[in-house]
Length: 93
Figure 1 (cartoon, rainbow, N blue to C red):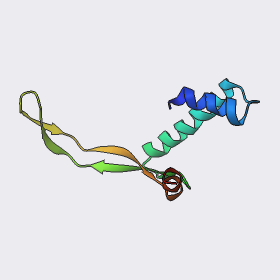
Figure 2 (figure 1 turned 60 degrees about the vertical axis):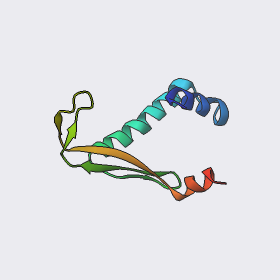
Figure 3 (figure 1 turned 45 degrees about the horizontal axis):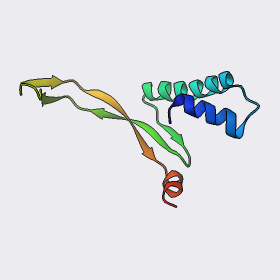
């Protein structure tokens, strides 16, 4: 499912009175809020769904697969998602 599919499901199934452009604004604000929180190194926890968090990857030396040369990879922050217990239970019914 992509973002446009999500918007269509929101408007057609649960809330037929909401216009697609309004649902698109809601979805965009939701994702933008999560992205802004992660950019500030804040944890986003949605009870029953999961947790979005940031992990720091240290700098390392990697290899170029084409020619085998050593390449320096700088340290960076990586976002990750950990599924919540409620979501695990729904998936494994």
